[in-house]
Length: 470
Image 1 (cartoon, rainbow, N blue to C red):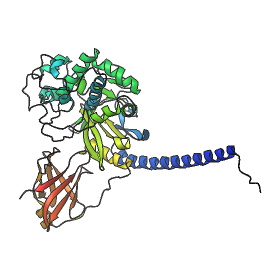
Image 2 (image 1 turned 90 degrees about the vertical axis):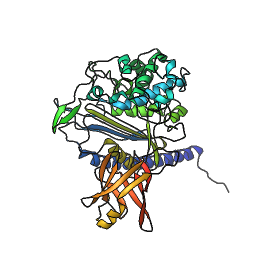
Image 3 (image 1 turned 90 degrees about the horizontal axis):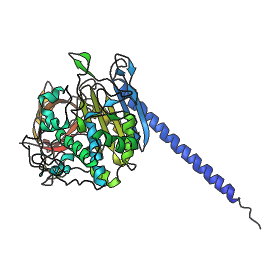
C-alpha cells in the first residue's frame, strides 16, 4: 500500500500560513489592548487641560512601541499654536541624565574614572581632592547648592560664564563629608559639565550634539539659548493672581549642564530607546540605574542622573524638572521597557504634581491601574485612635524619612509629611488615600486593636513603614 504524503513545499506553506495567522492574531490583540489603554489615558488627561490655554505633551511607550502620544493645549497662546508631540519644551533638570550619560561615555572610552577627584580637572577648586566624579553624579559631594541663592531662584536675567557660576558656591563650606549623605545638588552637575568640556576638548553643547543628540536621532533637541532659532519651541507661562502671564525671562547660561536642554516627547522617546540600543553599554546603563550606597552602607534613592524609585512593585528610574514657565517628568521601568514622559509649558492645574499623573499613566501601561475607591465614613473615636507621631523604621540599608504624624481635624485625618499636610480620605477602616495626591495612600496596622504601624505607599516617592511612637 502506498501512502500519499503532502509535498514539502505544501507543508512549508501551511506552516508559514499558520505562523502568519498567529502573529496577526497576537498583533491584533496587542493593538486592541493598546487602543484601550490609550483611551484610558486620554480620559485621565483630557479634563486637565483647556484647549485655549497652555498645556502639555505626553508620550507612553512599552517594548519600543508607542502606546500613547498626544498634545493638549497651546504651545503659544498669543498665536494660538497647538501643542504636538514635536513641540519643544525646556526640560530643566531632566538635563542631568544627559550630563550623567556624557560622563559615563567618557568613562567607557577610558578618558576618565568615576573615582577621579575633582582636583584632577579643576586644580584650584577648594576641597577638590576630597570630592570625586562619582560623588558629583550621585549627589553625595556635600557641595553647597547655588540654586539656594535668591538671585538664582528669581532667575538670572543676565548671561553668566561657567566660572561665574562656580564662584557662587566654590568657597562655601561642605555641608557634610563627601559620601556621608545624599543632598540634591545642581552645583555638582555644573562641575560635571566643565569636566566634560576639559576631557573631551569640546564645548558641552557640541559634545552632546555629536555624541548623543545626533546618534539618537534627536533632531529637535538642542542646548537652549534665548537667541537661537528653535523650531516648534513652546512659550512658557505662569499665573500671577490667577491671571495667565508670560513666564519671566531667565538666561539659559545659568542652568548650564544641570538644566539647559530643550526637547520634545518624541525626541525623549528616541533618547530612551538609544539607552537600550547601544548608545552606552548595558553594564554602564545598569551602573547609572544602581542606587547609591553611602559611606556607612545606607542605600539612597539616587543613581547617576536618575532618581531610583518603584511603581507597582517594579524598579523605576525617574527625574523631573522645573524652570520658569516649564515642567517635565520622565519615568523608565527597565524590566518592562516602559517609558512615560510629560512635558509642559505650564504647571498642572490644581495641587497635583506631575509625578502623580505619570504614576497613573505608568500603572495603566503595566495593566495594573490605580482604582479610585469610594470614601467611607469612620467614627471619630477610631480616627482619634490613629492620631499620633510615627517614627520611620531604619533597616540600616535604605535611607528614609525620620517621621510623619497624623492629626484629626474637621472630621478627617491629616497626614503631616515632607513639611506639608495632606487630607486623608478613608476607603476602609485601615486604608486611606491622600486627597489631591492620588494614588498616594497609607495603611494603619494594629495589634490587639491598638495601632502600631503606618505603611506609606507613595508611587514614585516614599514607600516606608513607620512605627507609632508611644
